[in-house]
Amino acid sequence: MSERFVKHATFVVERTYKTGAERVFEAFADPEVKGKWFSKPDQFEFRVGGREYSSGGPPEGPVFTFDAVYQEIVPAERIVYTYTLDMNDTRMSVSTTTIELFPVDGETKLVFTEQGAFFDGHDTPEIREHGTGEMLDALGRLFA
Image 1 (tube, rainbow, N blue to C red):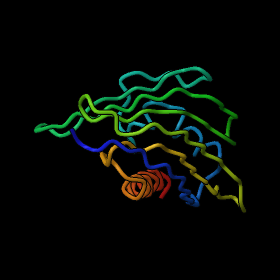
Image 2: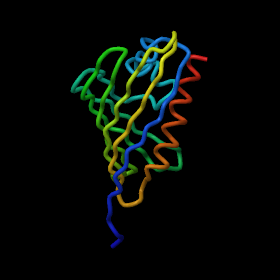
Image 3: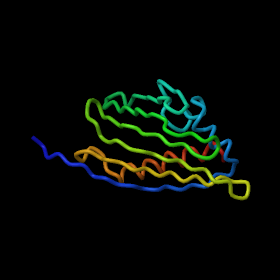
Image 4: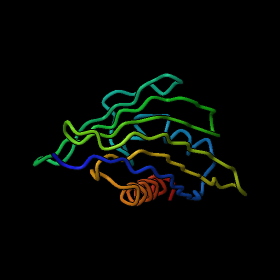
């Protein structure tokens, strides 16, 4: 049997986008827009208590499953959700994510904070932080 352990971590990724907070918020709230920079959701209920679910991966495998529940939504200001990330039947992590939007001189500063429990070395906070940065860069290309 392999060693079981949990690595707890918090990371913060910040980006500034050349658009208003309403447009950045919409990129999280509208499943069609979100599908352009994040995985296209199989299920999407953008409301407090609502669920976002997506599952997929490369043709040769593995299958990754993102399963989130929205905990707090303040239009154009804040989104908080909890989520699990699985690889096939293996739970990789459980996280709480807070997205804050701040208007700054006609632009929007986004602060993405993730607090996670990463299980048994299947994923690491460093890999997740790097992937989050790439994801937020993809979001930024919508506003370029």
